[in-house]
Length: 203
Image (tube, rainbow, N blue to C red; front, side, top):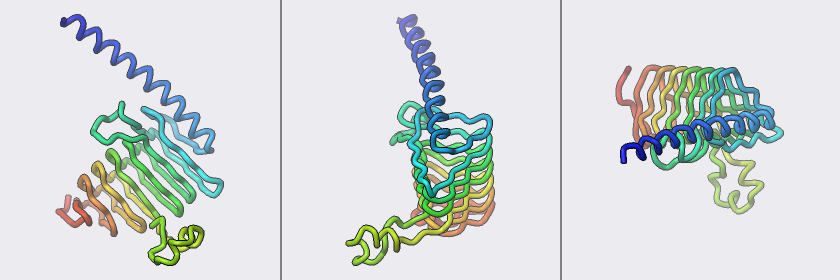
């Protein structure tokens, strides 16, 4: 029985390595075909979802790491990383994302060394107008939806299942607790958590 267990583990580990290698190559091709330059050390486990429109621009720095789907970084509610880019999305060096969705219609910046946990979402837009009459007209609805730049500083850690909304600026070295909803600026070197996120303490 022990031999069967060890054989299974060896096959499983080997298959994970092969899948990781193949999906990484596919992800690199996807970034290339969407004209997204990636720096040295790019690693993708699993296949992301990537849409860059003709108006969008997307660049990533060195050692960019992403985990996608149910096989990688298993924490529950797995999804691939999703990038919808119609504005300017800039990601620095040594950034890691797991199942993160970023919708960028205006501007999103993520600085060096930041880690964003499983199933977080970052939106720089409201998607819809707040006026009822506008929402009955899709074109008008989209045109009047508010948007504002999102800026995430260096060495930030954002816990799993958190939401970062338009206009938010998170200072360097700050930590966002899991399942938080961030609606306003967070200074550097602070811990915030909750819905809406509130100050917990200085680091």
